[in-house]
Amino acid sequence: MVAGLSGRVPALVLVDLQGALGFARDDSSWITTAYSAGELAAMPFAAWFAITFSMRRFHMTMLAAALLLAAALPFIRDLNVLIALRLLHGICAGSLVPVLMMAALRFLPTSIRLHGLALFAMTATLSPNVALGLAALSVDHLDDWRWAYWHLLPLGLIAMGMVGWGIPKMPAALPRLKQADWFGLLLGVPGLMLLVVGIDQGVRLDWFQSPIIVAALGTGAILTSLFLISEWLHPAPFVGLALLKRRNIWLGFISLAGLLVVMSSAVNLPANALGSLHDFRMEQSAGLGLLVGLPQLILGSCVALLLYRRWVDARHVFAIGLACMSGACWLASAITDEWMVQQFLWPTLLHVIGQPMAMVAMLFLVVSTVQPMEGPFLAGLVNIVRVLSTVVAGALVSQLTAIRSRFHYESLRDQTGNLLPHLAGFDPPGVLVEQVAKQASVLAIADVYRAIGLLALLLIPLVLKFQYIPAPVVPRISPPALPIVQAGAAS
Image (cartoon, rainbow, N blue to C red; front, side):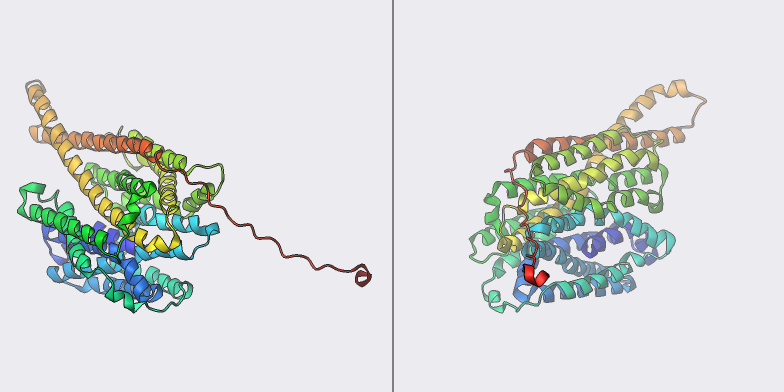
C-alpha cells in the first residue's frame, strides 16, 4: 500500500502542488513520469537484491528510504531536484512490491497462500482506488497538499514494524554479487525508464511528432531488447525469462495487461468525466474510489476461499469477473451530461465484484505453475508487466478520449453550422460552441467505455485457454490423540 499510494496520491494533487510551488503545468508533469520510471526500473532487480542482502534487511532499508523521501519531498522548491528525488522515490517504493510477492510464495503455507495472493492483488484493486479519497482528504479537508506525501508515514511505520516482526533474519549471500548480470542491469535500467518517459509523455507531446518521444521510445526499445537478450543468455539472470515458456504465465501476462486497462475504467474514468462535465473536485467523486477500494479488504479473501473449493474452476471465476467489468462499462456507456455520482453506482458495484474475482483468479493461475524457489524470478516479471501496463492504460485512455473528442466535435460542429440559420434569436454562438464541446466530450467518454467493455469481453476466450489448475490441497491437521485411561485408574 505504501508503494501504491506513493505514486498515485501525489499525482492526483499535482495541480495543487504546481500552484503552490509556481511550476508550469507541462514542467510539473515530469514529476509523475519520474516516479513511474523509477518504479519500473526497480521491478526486475528488487527480488534479486533482496535475496543477496537478505529480504528483511533490504525491505526495511527500501521502506525507510521511501518514508524519509516522503517526509522531505514537500520541502523541495527546485523542480529539477524534485524530479530527481521523485525518481529515487519510485525506485525505493517500487522495490517493495516484488519482495511482497516473493515472500508470499516463499513463506506462506498452502492453507493460506491464496489469501496472501489476495493481499498482493490489492496493489491493483485497493491502493489505486482509495488514493482518490486520500488525495481529497489532503487538499480539501486538511487543506495542505503536503499531506499527499505525509499520509504515508504512519502507514509505513506500521509496515516496518510488521516486516521487522514477521520476516525471519537470514544471512546475506554476498558471493552472488560476482555472478550477477551487471551488463544487463546497465542496459535495463535506462531502457525501462525511457520507455516510461515515451509512453507517459506521449499524449502531451503528440507522440511521434515530438523528437523527445521518438528518441525515448526508440532508445528505450533498443536498450530493453538488449537487456532481455542479455538476461536470456546469462547463467544467473535477474528475471526468469525461461518461465515464459509455460502457457499460464505468458497467457497471464497478456491477461494482466488487458485487465489493468479494464480496471482503469472503475474510478479514474468516472472521476475525469465528472471533473470535465461538472467541474467536480476530487472530494465530490472520491466516494466512488472508496466504494471500489475498501470492500477489497474483505472480497479478496472471499475469492480466495472460493478458489479453495474443489468444484471451482479458477478460469471461470476469472471470466465471470471480466464479464462483470464488461457489463459495468456497457452500463456506463449510457452516460449523458446530466450524470452525477449516483448514476455511476451500478457500474461501480459491478467493478467491486469483478475486480477481485479477476485479479485473484489470475494470480492463482499464474503462480500455481512455479515452485516457491522460482518466486523471485516470477515476481520481477509480473511487476514489470503490472507497472508498464498501468502506464500504457493511462496513455491509451487519454489518447482514445482525445481522438474521439475531436471526431465528435467536428461532426457536431458541422451539424450545428447547418442549423445556425434556423437558430437565429436563440442561444448566442459562444453558448452553442460550449454545448458542442460538452456533448463531444460525453460522446467520447461513452466510446471509451464501449472500447474497454469490448476489450474485457475479448479477454474471456483467452482466459479459458489457461491450463486448468485444481484447487490447492490443504493438509488436514489431525486432532491430538486423547490419553488412554485404564478402567482401574478411572475408578
